[in-house]
Image 1 (tube, one colour):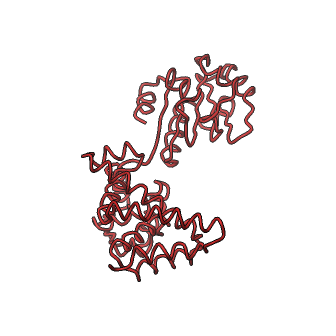
Image 2: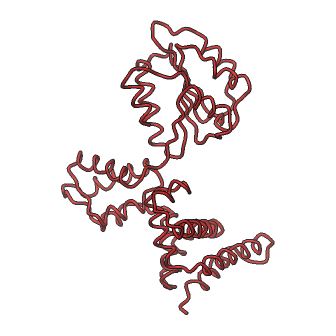
Length: 327
């Protein structure tokens, strides 16, 4: 991201930009910032956009070869094309010979680092990976929005807000706007406000459920499970997410045991640092044996469900009854 800012500040642009990663909010911001620096708003003569599958690559190449009309740059935006994984032969070969007046901007959800697009962007352009920022960056970003609205957020409220909304910055922005509206003239956002207004994603409920299991709180665990069922979450999806969380715990616990800190682990496993810290804390409530046994049981129950020997709702209940029961 810093490299895009530097190019804009200097007014010196590459012919090829690849913006990819999981964080759509930031990808949108940097895409728009780059386009605004290259072409005037409404300049449809020198700006073209292609998106999704079925893109005519010959047409892109033809446009890229056409001189801009009374402008310095011709900009071609290509979004969600799938070219980050597999690039058509003709366009892939063309990337090394883009005219100096043309800028190709690719915005993709992911990029294969062995693929033609990534290699070309790295060699003769900019490859910009944008994922969820760490907690410090998010706190600064949310803080700026709170200051603009004349609000403050208590520390425990911020922790809960982060836990409930960290799926994406777009989601965080929407939930923060709702919170600011909810508190009205009050300048302090409390934990009670967050719990009253913010919508907990299923991932947050899974985490709360695992906390309840670790505390051997059968009633709370079953209540959370019933809440998810009432929200039309399929039992097998719930089981899959439990397994995913336990696999993360297993990996994070192992890396932590080798002396790695949260930031190092975050970069190794592709998780935000605050999520790693939370996972380390949760993993500390389970022994290595419990984690391994639960993963084995979940795999066994999933196989029984697929072969028609076990109801999917019962499969999750068996996990709960075994691991949330007091010993």
